[in-house]
Amino acid sequence: MSGPGLESLREEVMSCRRCPRLVAWRELVAAAPRASFAGQKYWGRPLPGFGDPAARLLVVGLAPAAHGGNRTGRIFTGDRSGEWLWAALWRAGLADRPDSVWRDDGLVAHGVWVTAVVRCPPPQNRPSPEERDNCLPYLVQELAALGGVRAILALGSFAYEACCRVLLVRPRPRFAHGLEVPLAGGRTLVCSYHPSQQNTFTGRLTEQMLDGAIGRAAQLAYGTGRG
Image 1 (cartoon, helix red, strand yellow):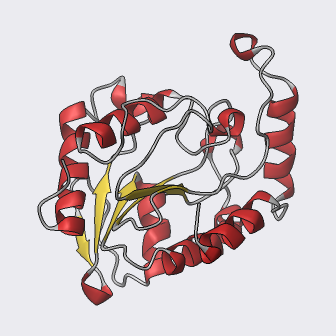
Image 2 (cartoon, rainbow, N blue to C red):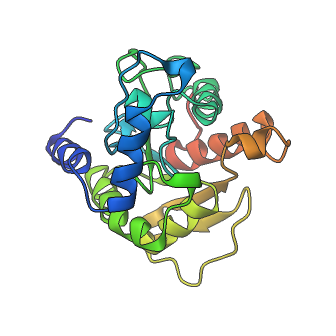
């Protein structure tokens, strides 16, 4: 993050302990790494967003993965979902490389900011409504600090519903891959299935589908996309 608004938000997010269940889980996971990550020091804290402070495209996911972002210290980094997302952003010209492995690996995002509704990994990837609502003010602040955002890509129904709450979308259309919802101020909310293994392994979400959603969101954000 850079800029005073984003920097202060980063510090606020990283020090958050609002949700006892999530605090306990993220720290328990960090204290007992998987065998495949033995010797690595887990981040074990809430995750701020990451990307280009001048972004006109915002990508919103569900939450960090317990052994992904909770380990690496960057959202959508170190797990299969992140592999899919950053490869697609790279193909769209929104990142300087197709992979993201660690918070200090030098990855640069171009014109996109990546974040999540919930900033700590929830057990079974299922935050409670209270945990979601505890985190929503961070998304509100993020949107305010990223004043140039013109398109928001929601990855999955959880992110979509949270964005609708924050953006006061009423009535709320039913979630669907490829759904576009016009927002106040000329912005647009675009939907995609989440690049989780549950979706990518089964073929519910293909690379072509994810590329299409990102390309459309970039087109709405920048007029002709980036590439």
